[in-house]
Length: 472
Image (cartoon, rainbow, N blue to C red; front, top):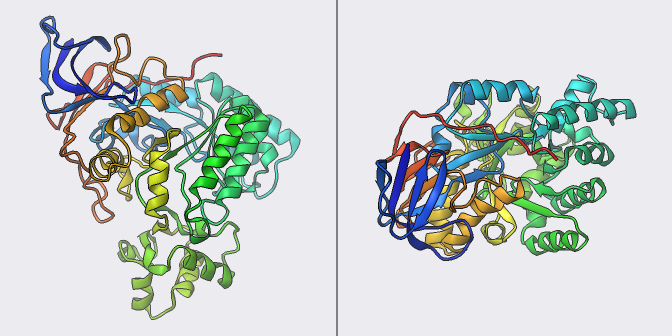
């Protein structure tokens, strides 16, 4: 099948100025780019006048693997222009990877999928329930064997989530031993709040000693003691680069994060009132903590901790400690804890790419709105970066970083992962109250030359592929 995308402004992924051109797609690839092309060889014409044609967006930190095999349309991802999702994040992946990849190839989804091997997954396989300690040398050897197995299956590298169990109990040396075998290290670091800079230092140490490139997942400065310290982050990245160590990051375009409330504490000392008092104060208080999941009281979902404390006639710290004790820490929250100026600095930085950190049906709006939000709020409205640069950071930059040599640019010979949107109207509509609300202004998505979104309607096609790490 062939398609002629006619009359659009092409943002080719280079970061440069847009130019009016036609794009010819034949089979799964881009075969011509010129103004104008004479025809599509009997194929279908897609009119793009007044719209931007861009390479498909690559989500470098995705949880779209959750439920993907039963939600093959991946609607929340497709509607924001994501064509490739990098999963296996935060230290958890679908094990064994070879079997999961085989299922995806037997029952393809709309999305291209690539995966990391999760440190927490292999740690759990080796240590079982006895994980609240440093691993012994023999256990690290067993973990290395599992990492090697998953790398052979096509894993992009090692992911960790060392703010969570079981990774929180690992030593830096354990992570170095696994990362050097995996060839790349991406991490939800130990502390994204007060200890963020120290946590970034640990990631750089792991990359340096393992001799691998590394990426900081969903980079943030998430509490008052580190607000405004973006320049210190950038200086660390640059110093590492001068030593030959490549450090990058990804970011989602929101000043609030989603996780379990227990990540506000870097220790597991949930019974210490003074630690909770400090933690709540450093994110601006209980009014900034929205409960998104609490099994004992489902009706509490959607209310702030401050409002719940008032309802229950308790102070917020007491209520927090009771909720954590009742669920062993399983209290889902969205916490507004980042500064807009810090977020803009991360969005602007040339070596920081974009992500959602979202799933197919998540309760944080990032899972449905991240890329339209960047293009609408931060490009069109606030002019934090140019449209061409935003497209580069969403496509060509991650393609280069993760070795997708056949994607990420609009040039003949590349795979036809393409997005068409109206730069004057594209915007996100997802909110914490309606986190899966559809974005506006993104009309067409092609993946491997097949339309999966056409005139703002899902086509039901599932041309996504498994993208494995190239053999080295």
